[in-house]
Amino acid sequence: MFGELFPTMSGVVLGAVLAFVRMNRSSKISAALLALLLASIATVASGEWDESPLFLLIDILEVSAAAVFAHAMVSWTSSRVRMHVRP
Image (cartoon, rainbow, N blue to C red; front, side):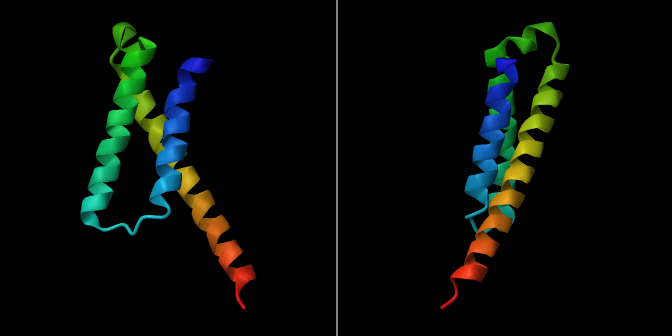
């Protein structure tokens, strides 16, 4: 149960941080590489790598999906806040 907490939370943090960064081509590549790094760390740290390297693909998808969801939620929330704060 707690083995999937790190990839999910790291994806949420990555997506939330990226919501406040202006994305150009190099930052998108950096974000993708960071997602791969976080997924790799999660796979090796949980010991899933010893069972099967395919767990890396699952963790990559998990980190990426959490990052996309968090990015969408933070962007939506900040746009709603900006819409209501106008003077």
